[in-house]
Image 1 (tube, one colour):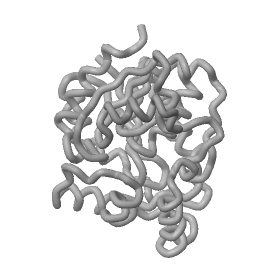
Image 2 (cartoon, rainbow, N blue to C red):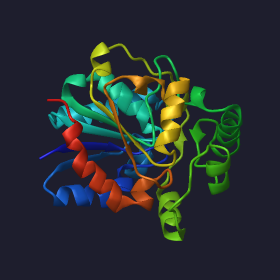
Image 3 (cartoon, rainbow, N blue to C red):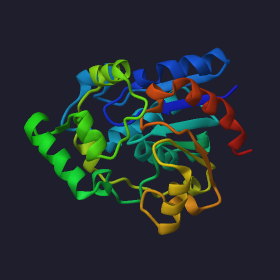
Length: 254
């Protein structure tokens, strides 16, 4: 039996993992889909004070209060930042740190810092015009793909309706607070990238080029899998994603 902790990306809650969670549990595994503060069924807890530290505590508390060990910790998209920090806090409880169409963020870097200028400008405009000055609303489909570079491949009308209908605006400070990484034990954890919207060959080239999202992946702790689809595989390819997650425990540390 494997224990999975799943953290969705920006604007998403634990609900986004429902088909994947059902598939993993049907095979006898323990699965904990986390909803971060202010999102999903916890949207009523959103406030200006919610920041990256809040999100880190959300995931750490699930793992510690449930006394989870040997966790396969999965972070999608934005949540790559969160799971990196969680692994920095409690590496002894993590057996495999998995990034789903995502990557680790360098120390002292905020998520917004890594966005290109056009994306930062879009986010800042949305916060002021539709986010009451402290929330990041989900952009339009055109903006998501054309400005933020999030591939919409595989998202039909039903998937788009479900995703947007349940998405919640995200507190801005979760995008602007820099991550603080201090524990060298995190660096020694086995890590896996499941790339979806970037071909694996392109990822390897970005690693070689020292791209900030991918530079850390040059270390021997990393392994790679490819699931060709758009940026939201839990909607576009939930069955195939579930199959991949079922077979990744072989990558775990002894």
